[in-house]
Image 1: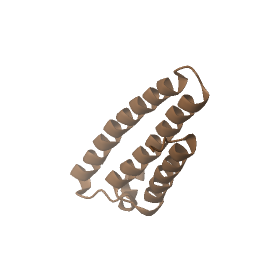
Image 2: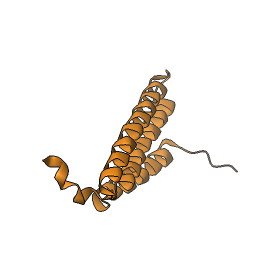
Image 3: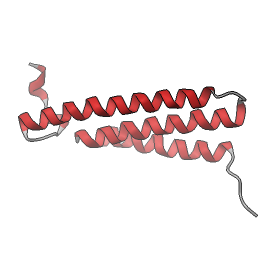
Length: 104
């Protein structure tokens, strides 16, 4: 007997990814780890969009929104990595707490 995943299975997976992403954002101050936390949160949103679309709607609305979230995540990662590389070139460190001199 093969167990078919239900909406609750996808919601539990999405909740785990979201809480892990928030935990990373709250506890880590390293630039690349912050990006990883944001990506986990966006992936949790994608899982929710596609799962709710599959189990509740008949159209492709959830899939289209998921594609937009993936485009947003890719552009966010590219811009953020460029900023982190620029910070590393100037300060030789990417600890976010030590970057208070950028305010001036």
